[in-house]
Image (cartoon, rainbow, N blue to C red; front, side):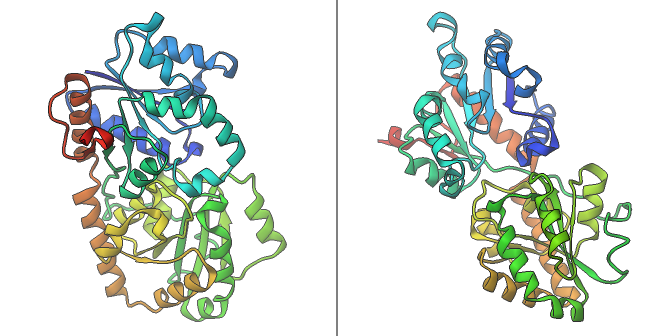
Length: 372
C-alpha cells in the first residue's frame, strides 16, 4: 500500500498540521505502509493544482490522505476521485484538522462561504472518508450535512524524554532562577484566546509578583503585532518571544511550570498534547477538545474569558509542587494510552485497508447515513 499525505507546507510556520503530518508519516513508515509526504507549496501557485493532480494521479499511489481545507489539496479532490477522463480515480481521506468547527468558520467567513460553494463541499462529499480528531469535530462535520463515513482518529504525540538535559530556555535572561513560567505556545491568532489571557494576567500582576510567576507568550503568525502591542503597553511579568522549534521548543517545554491554551476554536491542539507529554499541568478551554485530560485530572477546564482565566491562574499559582507533578504524571499517562503515534498509525492502516478492500469497517468509523 502506497499512501500519499498532502498538506500545504512542511514549514513549522504552518502550525500544528505540519507537526502532526510529519510524525504520522514517520510512524507509518515503521509499519508495512509506504507513506510519503507531499507539500503543495513546493509548486508555483499558478501551476500548483495541475502539478499536484499530475503527481497524485500516478499509479504508484493507492490512496491520498489530505490535511487541512480551503487550499489546493481540496481544490483537486473531486478530480482525483474521478481520475483522468473519468476513470482510474484515487481514493481520498480528508482530515479537516478543526477547520469545520463553527468557531473556525467565523474567521474569513465570506471567503469560506464562497469557496464552500465553488469546490469545498463537493470535495468533502467526494472523499471516501473524513477524519475527525475528536467527538466535537465529528459533530461539527455532521452539523454541516456531511453524511458519509467519518473516522474518529486523533492527533498523536511522542513521550518526551524528561531525564534528558536541555539547553537554557530563551527566557533565561528574563526570569530569575527559581521563579516559574506559565507557557502559551502556538500561533498568535485571536481564536487562541490571547486577548482574554492577557486581560486576565494584567489583573494578576501583583499576585504573580508575590508568587514568583511569569507569563511567556511563545509563537508566531501575527507579523509582530503582539510584541509591538506589549512594547507600547507593557504588562508586568509578561513577555513575548518569536517562534521556537526543535531544541529551542523543547527547552521551553522542559523549563515551563504550566501550560495554558484558552482557545475559542481548535481541532485537537498539538501544543496541548506536547505540554502533557512534558508533564506540564494544563489550563485548557473546552474548545481544545480534550475532555479526557480534564476527567483524568491532567488539566483544569477554563473558559476563554478574563474573569474565569484569572480565577484559574490564581488557583494555579500556589499549587504545591507535589500536586502539580501529579497532574503532569496523569497527563503523560493519558498521552501514552490515548495519543501514541504507533496506535494512530495502526488505526490509519486499518482505515485505508477498509477503504481499499471493503468488508467490515473499523469500530472507530462512523458510517453516517450508511448506518441505516
